[in-house]
Amino acid sequence: MEDLSSARPLAGRWIALDLRPARPLTLLGPAWAVLCGALASGGVGARGSSILFLLLALFLSDALLGAWRALWLESDWRATVRQLSVSAATWLALSTDAPHSRVARARERTARSFAYARQMVWPLVNSEIIGQLLIGLFALCLAILLGQAAIALTSGAMLLALIEGEIGAPRGAGMRAVYEISFPWLIGQSAFGFFSALSLFLLILSTITYRALLGLASTRQGHWLIWSNLAQFVVVLTLVAASAPIPAAVVALGLLAQILWQARYHLDRDGVAYARRAQSYVMISMLMAALAVWF
Image (cartoon, rainbow, N blue to C red):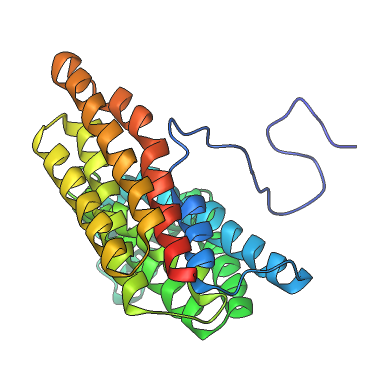
């Protein structure tokens, strides 16, 4: 029988997967971007296949790609590898009283190499890298179901997360915005096989707005307000030029509400609170942009 009090079961499955709500402070993120991208494609309908593709795109962009990024940025196995690499010279060097026989020295060197490999490989096997590899495999399998464009986008997103991990989260906030808004939007849109220059331009503006909210929440630098306001103002102008006056008016009202909330931000300088207040307006702006492309 399995010992429930032990962290390692006596018998049973080889791999344990953990799926739980992330409970973000804001609802704005990859899932909403997927929904907007799917709506912008114009291919979402009440058919069973359409709903299935939408659910697969949501799970791929939010759960799997989100877990891939989190495991890469938050895991500690890279520090373990660095420490073991530094100690490699000590492990592999022969002692001063090593036997002078060529066969004996080769035998000792081989034994030390195997011991070092065992000490280095096992921490990797018993770390988050195995979970990340499995998540990456599952993500690519789902992308195959969604089409060739989804495969390329998923691969690009996974590579971008690796680059962000090497740069660092503070300096890689722009990459995070692309990872959590641009790629999910494009994956949702590619699942239904339709792209347009208007959709791509509105997506870039939405990504800039999201990046501005990340900057406000993390650095509390006021210049991000300018970027957010400017990006959404350009969205309004673009929707007017695209003969979508109703979505443009809705986005303009949301921008006006954000400007009013910014007076509160200048008083308390609480970027996280402002991001929570502004998220609904940004979500509506993205939704209006997607519906304008659809219709």
